Amino acid sequence: MNIRSILLPTDFSECARHAVPVAAELARLLGASVVCLHVVEPVVPPVGWTPMVGTLPAAPDFGEQLDESAAHELPAFSGGEEFAGLDVEDLVAHGEPAAEIVRVARERGADLIVISSHGRTGWGRILFGSTAEAVVRHAHCPVLVVKPPQEREP
Image 1 (cartoon, rainbow, N blue to C red):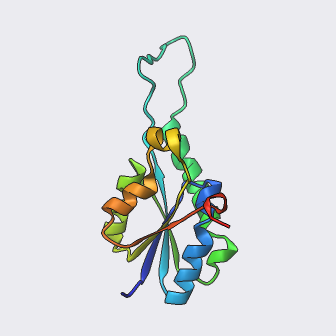
Image 2 (tube, one colour):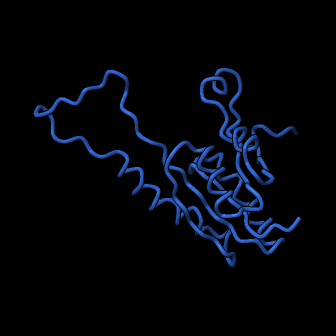
């Protein structure tokens, strides 16, 4: 197996940061490039929400704010010392995270996806699902799931 391109999805959470040294070290050892991906989820108003036209100033465009935030945070994420000397590209996608990660991996020809698990169990996993689990199930390439330290066995 020849790994030339590693996809590193991030939601900028502390859990996601745990995948960075793993992806960077693998890229260094294998001579691979890294694509850091952030997926902006669609902003959907709550059920029954109706804007009150004329009574309040125009509501900010939250989707636009999320795009601006991603544009600011992604270079800070990928510009860390862990990636020094590596070929790193930033990419922002829009949609459901697991589906977009799988799509981008396929379109970019990623040879490996390195993703962090958020460690949800019980109701949290039932209610929110697992992005990492969905990526493992649907990706065309191998997926390395990095557990946060609190999930690791001593």
